[in-house]
Length: 445
Image 1 (spheres, rainbow, N blue to C red):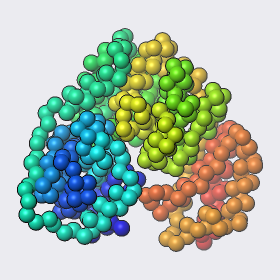
Image 2: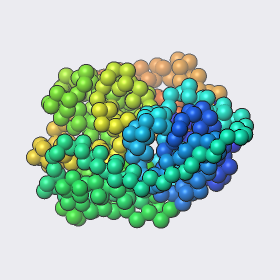
Image 3: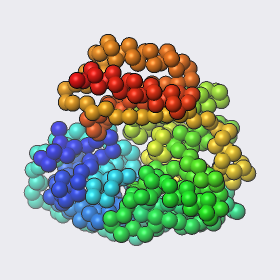
Image 4: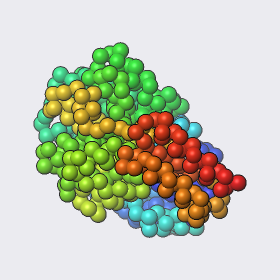
């Protein structure tokens, strides 16, 4: 089900090509549907730095207000900041953003009252109302109220998460992806006591995620080495993800960050239930590190929604994905890149060791290789019904043993099968993936 435009809720809201699929008309109708289904007194609305953002935010806000619901306009803010404001007001929120996608795309993420993810039943109800497209008649029109203090309140909240500790003596280089973190992130790290400089912090509406940020960390890696910084932090366009760079220029991905945080929290009796939630794509090295430390790994499907669901079900404090989408459930309702980066800098300060040394002791990443195979419509059953493919997967798993892993899964957003292998050497990982891809393609022929 979806709107008349063909758009529907995916793993993280609604996304489409701005002004082609996700038009102001479509977005206005979505705003009406959200207001009708959630029926709040207010909805907090923010956006990232895409050129299409102001028009789509205006359209969504108009749809919400047309249903008699007030809009709290917080302007350009990271997605987790909008969720934070929604949590403090105990009302729903919405963000105009396509996260790490190029500027030509845009999207709408909707939070339930209190800043939590919508459950699938509520999304289905919104989609049904969106498709129906009827307008409510009569009644008052909601107000659109600009909140000039939202950014400051969120920044203060982040600094407060350090519980009075300071980031004295540490130098941090930020890559803000020319996105929503561009204005706020440098100030937050500086307020916490760090020496801060930034790249990718000059958004022009079209350069979001363009050769910068967490999807293209090469510029940050080079800049950290050149500046002799202690660490670098790379955000995505809406700053709900964070990857790190150590002082030698090495990339520290979400799996490595999860290992660092899990071990640190466990040592400080802060790892609730002695477990972490990770997706099936997380590296085997993380699992082996957690096993050695006596920390349980709760595995979920890909997507921060599934990670958060598992955390809530088990009462876990920490969960995350390889992409750098990390959730500290005691401190936030969703993944927060700025919070992740701030807590990483704090960890480095408290431990008194370089990030490279800390990362090396936390886990050893196993070589991982991933390839995609196009999956024609209606052929997904082959993943579970092909004896030849099943035999090839079993053979690969037996070959790799406990020091390797094989995963085949359909993409949640594209007609593809993702074939992944982890092995003791890169050569072995590539060979296993190529072999499985060949079998899969022959079965599809």
